[in-house]
Amino acid sequence: MLIVQKFGGTSVGTIERIRNVAERVSRAKRMGHDVVVVVSAMAGETNRLIDLAKSAVPKPDPREMDVLVSTGEQVSTALLSMTLISMGFKARSLQNHQVRLVTDSAYTKAHIKRIDAQKLTSVLKEGAIAIVAGFQGIDEQGDITTLGRGGSDTTAVAIAAALKPHARNGLVCEIYTDVDGVYTTDPNIVPQARKLKQISFEEMFELASSGAKVLQTRSVLFGMKFDIPIHVRSSFNDSEGTMVVNETLDMESVVVTGISYDKNEAKITVLHVSDKPGIAHSVFAPLAEAEIVVDMIIQSASSDGYTDMSFTVPRGDYEKAMAILQELVKQKKATYVVGDDKVSKVSLVGVGMRTHSGVAAKMFKYLSDAGINIQLISTSEIKISVVINEKDMKKAVAVLHKGFGLEDAK
Ligand code: ADP
Ligand code: ASP
Ligand code: MG
Image (cartoon, rainbow, N blue to C red):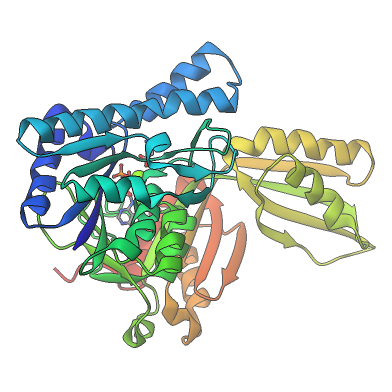
């Protein structure tokens, strides 16, 4: 079998933990599997490098930022590889110019275009363990790029997809992290959270894209597209984790599978804009031009030919978005712009929502019983999200988790 094992920052956070990872990798190798390992930077290292850049200059150049932050993963590959070699295994660290993981040139948030499987297969053919740096790629010019925070998950699943045609007797992508699997919600904020045996790609995608950082959203998309079985599990114990799989029939009997939250949110309302064709475009086009991603747009009912629009943006883009929208006020296209960067989004996810009604009504009741005010609501086929004051976030997740019966039976 071909096993791609990815180890996150906490899992390679110290030399002792790297030894523990080497032990686990060696076990898979001894069992006769082909093993490719993808590693993150040691815990805290990526943040340290980002802070270092910010202390050098207020707005670091994105190309240079990627040169800097990609070094964290390089360190981990070498440390793990030399540990395995000292244990008597053949191992080879590989950076992305060697693997040829080619991306576009969107520094700090690059997308993978292709992976040259040949280098990896030749290392595997020699009987060696390939240790690949996660999170980074090279663009067509050969410049270093990175895939966005949490990007090593995507490296791992994308490598599994690229190697799939070469896999003998099956393939699995194992994501080793600091929790035992995917839970009904973040176990670090709700201790009663329950580990899921399995979850569908679609649900995992919705949870990840609405804030659950246990897997990077794009890794789930790769898994879905190339049908890669993903096993999320702990690097500290041997317990079975969570399989991310294609949807099965019985999954729809569960209405709510999980709850996610996102603290990285800010809300903006543009007040009193004239309600005529083209107005939404004039509000959102300048934001799109500034590469600000807008989420949860709500336009209120028109009165006297005017309307209000509310939406959310990532918190890091809040100041920039407010400045852009002030221009609309200057041009007299809107009367005011108000905002709040102390909001959070809480989302309920479950494929069962397709076939069960009344989930939103229940959600709003649990929140109102807890005295939590809802500021914005959005729904999709298998997800309902609300924006609330950030101080209510933990409480909201806890009451919804209990209300929808997601707690551990124990
Ligand atoms: P790694 O460094 O291994 O990539 P991350 O910190 O990126 O780990 O992701 C693991 C974290 O994801 C957990 O520690 C947990 O706090 C968080 N998390 C959020 N939602 C969930 C969830 N539903 N199930 C499990 N973990 C979750
Ligand atoms: N080291 C990178 C980060 O901290 C990538 C990863 O760990 O997945 O975001
Ligand atoms: Mg991660």
